[in-house]
Length: 132
Image 1 (tube, rainbow, N blue to C red):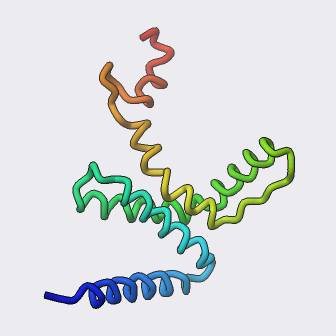
Image 2 (cartoon, rainbow, N blue to C red):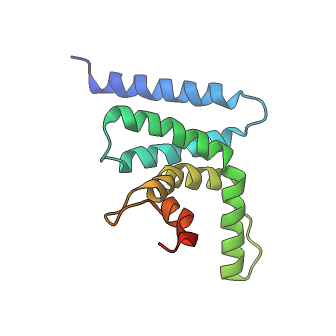
């Protein structure tokens, strides 16, 4: 049986190596990648209702969403905070990456889930003009 310190050291080394290699991709801020990774970890730790293979897939989707939506989410956070506090607030892109990667998959699942009365939220919007 392997010692716990060996397992945790090996895991930490592989995570740091992966983040470092991802940080070498030109055009992407390493802070955004680290923040998207943190948000994806938050999502995976809260998604205990899924099997491990689905959590691994959703981790990847969450990570990619966090990287691509970082600027957009940061601008929304900046706008909301500026309006609420009546002061100019600028949220950095890594904050947007963390929030986007932690929430994006849950928000999409909420919109596509079928409630007990039938149909998803998207179905209700589509059928709104039909009188149903």
